Structures are given as structure tokens and as C-alpha cells.
Length: 173
Image (cartoon, rainbow, N blue to C red; front, side, top):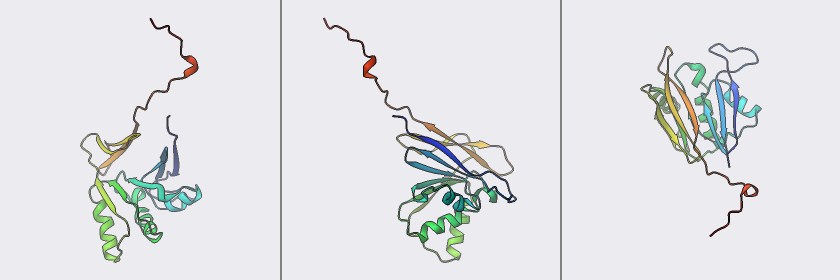
């Protein structure tokens, strides 16, 4: 059975806020799995608006370090902590993102109540970042002013389904 797949655009504007639009962020639903791609300011409000269960997001992918792609991340991580999240969260992003996030929480003396893991992305070719039974997520380099990666979600081939009514009776010898 092919799992459901959909994309919810939470924001698609660039650096300067625009009334009625939000900074870059998308939620990808693949079966029961939710992935967050970029996390601009306003992402949490958009998640609420579209009634997306944030607790089901276990993987966040940040394309690059321009603020409109990641400045909502510290707030989201903080909200997870305030809501007593215990399940692990993995963030995939460029060099420096780990330092930005951990420095923030170190200086405001916050100890997260859940495991937070950073996976550094690379602009050196295609790299598999996440491998699940149903799909993989790979990064690939993009040309931009800063080191930037795009993300490719690839469905794995599933079991083929035989439709019984189409079977032909073949006599056995």
C-alpha cells in the first residue's frame, strides 16, 4: 500500500515580512511521518493554523543560514521543551547551525528535556540524511550566496499488490 503524501506550505516569503505571508517553511507528510523543511519566523503559528501535530515532527531540515529559513527554530525547540517533549528531535542543517542553537540555550541556561541531535549537511554532492523503511531524504548542493542544500524525498519501492480477480486459472499438469 502506498502511504499518503502531501505538502503543506506554511510560508513562502523571503527576508522581509509581508502581510498575509510567512517566512519559508513546509511540512511534508509521508504516511504517519511529518518532516519540517526550513523553519522561518511564524512557523509555530502556521502549524497551529493548519492543525498540524508538532509532536509528530521528529526531523527538521534547514537549507541554509539566512534568517528567513531558520529563525523560527529556537522558538519551536523551546516550545517543545515547555510542552514536556521527551521524544528525540533531529535537525539537519549546515555548519554553524548546531553552534547557533546550542549557544542560545547555553546562554539562557535552558536544559532541554529531550534528546536533540544535529546532523551537518554537506554541499559536496548528494548525501543520504535519513533512511526509513518507506522513504529516504537526501541533500544536494544548491547555488546561493551561502552554502545551501536542497532536500529530495524518495519513496522506496513497496510490495506489489496482486488483484485476485485478475488471476487466470492455469491448469496444472
